[in-house]
Amino acid sequence: MGELSEMKSEKPSNPEAAEDTDHESDSGLETALDAFIKHPKRHKRGASTEYDKGYKKPENILTIISIILTASAVIFSGVAAIYAIGAYNAAESQAKSEGVAATEAQRQSIIAQEALVDENRPWIKVTITPSDVTWFPWGTAGMSPGLLLKNVGHSPALGVRAGAWAYVAGTKQDMLQFQIEKCASLKKTPIPQSQYGVTLFPGDDTDASHVGLGLLGFEIDPSQAPLRNKDGYGFYIIGCADYMFGSPPQHYQTFVAYEVWRVQSRTGLTKGLTGEFPQGASVPVSDIIIDPTYAGNYAN
Image (cartoon, rainbow, N blue to C red; front, side):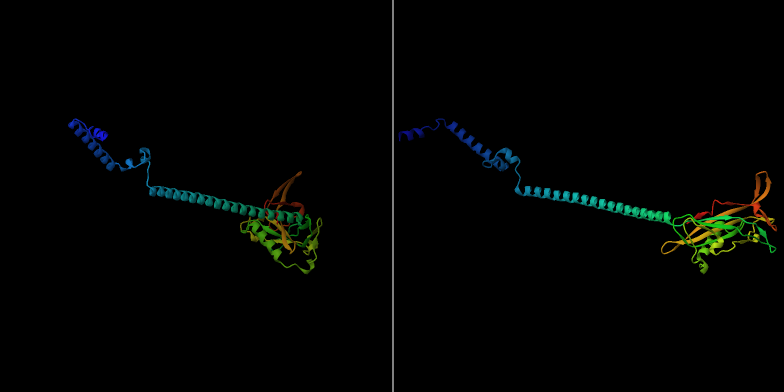
């Protein structure tokens, strides 16, 4: 009891000081309540100030994760699309390259086959020699040139035929077109029975009489050339050989063209030549020279 009495008696002897203490306690409580109301997060039990500053609600974290996953999916899709486009372009480029390579290989194969055929097929060489030019009373001239055929290839030539014609200078038709038409006609003409067995083996030669042509000759008609000199005329000898080779047999032809010159004068070894032949006069072969032209001599 004495101790209890002593504890109770320890009240401040100064009433004003006691009132000040109570007032300070009340003010501190009001301040704490006010701070709690304004900043509730800072006064959670067991939470520090640094933690409160970085605190986020759980739903915000899920949203961020969802955004990250969506962005990753978009990026992955873009990368996959870029890869797919690259793969497509690479495949297309490869296909084009393979197509070009296949086309080139096919072209090279054709060239090789053609070269093989050309190496082993027959080739007919045509050589023409002139003859006299004879003038006829009805206003035309004629020539019977010699025509030699030789197989300079590596296989037999079948169904060999040949032809020669005069092309009068100054006609409206082109010389090469004239030659093409004449040789096409020769190819289309049925082979006579007497020529069925005509074959030229490699290295063999023959003249026109041995291929069923007999005496080869043609007529020269100056009236065909309205642009010519009225006192004379000039002409070319156009010829070709037609033959067959292969299985099935295919036609091949050799074309020749010669310009015909007349010796107009002689001075020692020098000869004066002219392309004009006098109308109404014959010309001996000794005064005739033929020269291959730049055009019209080829083979297929």
